[in-house]
Length: 147
Image 1 (cartoon, one colour):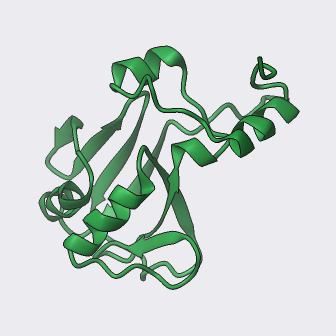
Image 2: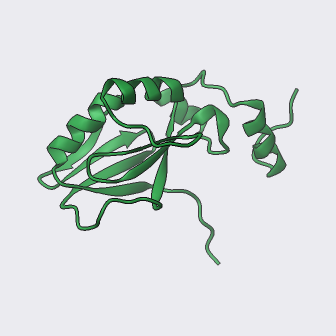
């Protein structure tokens, strides 16, 4: 059977691509990978988010996706500065203006990892993993043992 390897992209439905680019640009350093009249593609190194114009569903309350960031607390500050309500709970979750539920996680604290080449290309070559994340990766044989 084929094995799941990763996620290439996630597509978010929004009312207006221009408004979505403005909204996400207030929170994150947004770099476009490509653009068409009804879609925009936000680059995330070797992955991307697609913004698709034309919301067809009601706001999400349980369905969500996690965005990995280099600095969770800087993201919290950017959300607060943009006037975005952070959802109650112990995580860093928010709804965008179109009802997409986004969960923000810090790269340092999760199993997800990028190659050294991708991190270097993104200017993040010195972004370390926490010991907890490294232990989880080692347990699966996905990281070298400690020195």
